[in-house]
Length: 231
Image (cartoon, rainbow, N blue to C red; front, side, top):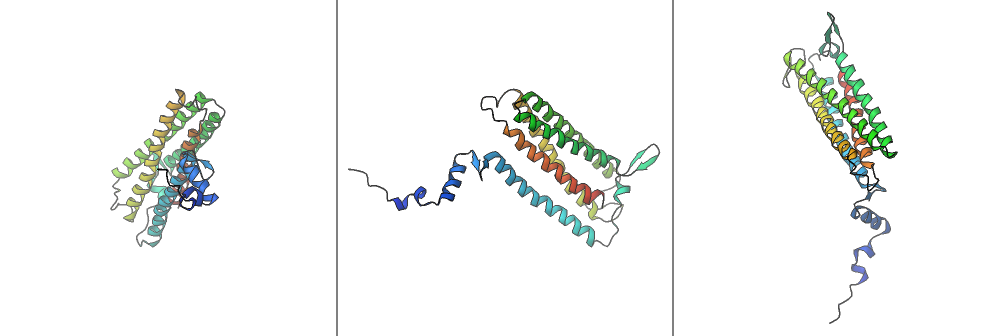
């Protein structure tokens, strides 16, 4: 018995519009989406979702700070370091910010080296970026331990408004987790790059994708620095 032909009207590929057909082809090929490489598109979607989370945290922080009736601790005093017999306001925070911003520069150079097929130099710069990130997290851990020793807790602190502790630990802790994850990604892909995992394909785009994540983490810190430490 001969097979019954399928009517053209029931064929999804025939009924799909050219735009929809192109979108389906992009996604099913696992190579391109929204006219950009699939991996880059997925990273942009993740960063967009993360923007909403950080935006909610910072909006909540601003709302709490402007609505509390209890005096808010002075960041210049809370985050001061005792150096040479005097308190230096925001010294540690300034160093942390300088390190993280510098890491964006080394990450950008790593991306440039990767697209120039200089994989060894790209791997070295990724490792250097990871070292900067690990240094940042270490300084943040020191900052946390200092404030905890001074009595700051998520439910209260001796310096003023009780919401200060919860806002500080939540926002900086969530950002610190992102930096830690970025350090792991940098070291992982630097190793894969150095051992030649991408030599056959000649596609070093993963360096740019990791770079997108790292630049996002640095950008978020700029907002945290401005709203939490300078306000």
